[in-house]
Image (tube, rainbow, N blue to C red; front, side, top):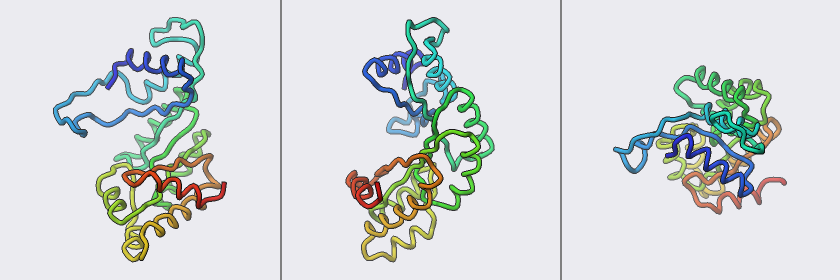
Amino acid sequence: QRTLTGMQADLLGAHAMGLRNVLLVTGDPPSQGTYADATAIDDVDAIGLTNMVTRLNHGLDIGGQALGGAAAFHVGVAVNLRAPSLEAEWRRLHYKVEAGAEFILTPAVFDLEAFLAAWPALAATGLPVIVGLVPIESLRQAEFIASEVTDVTVPDAMLDRLRAAADPAAEGLAMARELYQALRPRVQGVAIRALHGPADSVERFLRAVPA
């Protein structure tokens, strides 16, 4: 949790250390984490934070005062394809684009049909889209993601394939490759994540797909 001025200080410090690529998200309420009684600092959401970083890129702080030099952040934003109201999510994404977003990162995609249904709205922004992919290692991991991770959908067909597989890790890798091959021609990048699985699953995926 950071105040608005605290986040500005963090960003300027990170920029001084050479960080250039940032992903700006609103985040989850602290009450959903380890400390149920924790309170949130609601100075700014992802839209306001995008505006703030854009101002830094123009050499201005949050008060409009000159910094003596412009930052050079490459600004990324997230989109929740499982938002309770997709209409509201597309509206928020539009505001992020207006605020200065330069690329979009999606959550992990397991449901190809659902992603393709959302693709026209993503493409209409005109921004590069980086899609999240996760090579599943086990049925247990897939069932945990399906029940506990709120911004992704794991199709029943994927769970059925894992249940029937003699080697669930190999089957999960095969499904990730299939998604990669279907999505790569459309998007501008792919972000590989472990997502509650072993970190070396990412390495195995990278070895299994073409460079």
